[in-house]
Length: 307
Image (tube, rainbow, N blue to C red):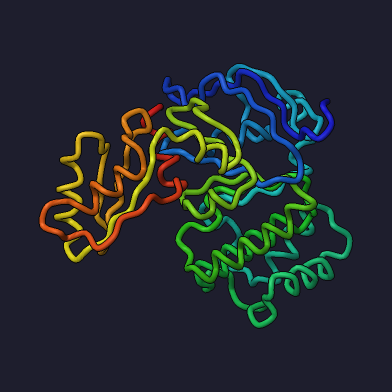
């Protein structure tokens, strides 16, 4: 096994009911990083993550996870994996403490009660230790679920949309926990949030079960064949309509008083010309215009068009 590589797979394919969900996927995943899996609904993100770690057997393909064969040694892999599903999967009718003690017993952790108390302290759940899990808010449920899957100190964390449906504060707290776990575990997570994608060490973009692109957030942004500009004015919709009339503009969209303008690199007349043309749009409605950095939204839109 290559040093530093936790997962090494080749040609993974999986179908359900005659529909191919993942197609001939090959990739290597390094230890000690957060990998974000992106793509439209039904693109194969969850199926891919589960195959990578032996939780789901591929129809074809081969590979290893944590040094174990994903086909022949799947049970050994599971001993080192913490899996957090998108839907809360702990026991609603048990308390926070009882859930954690139960998980500790399943994994054979010595002194389950002590392990649960330590997790409650780490998660900041003191005031909710005896609260029934089913009565927790979405954010506290996600925090409990993440705490439960990290209880046995796994080498690999699998997180399926870990922050879906939670508020901004809860998302930030969950990410603080993930940053802490990164040092000891490899983290594979699917996400629909662009800011979370930008915070990952590496990204994997899937579409229709195919691996379209992989790389750091910066690498994916640098590969986008589009320049992004912003214009600001009192009537953003009118500005967007006028911007679309420029022969080199690929698209323009109003958000509040700002207008986002996309220009394909092969068609650009140069940043100075674009800014000048935007400022001079009919009606004098543009207060100012500028070139902006390519963001994750641009990168994902570009990848979607490639797919």
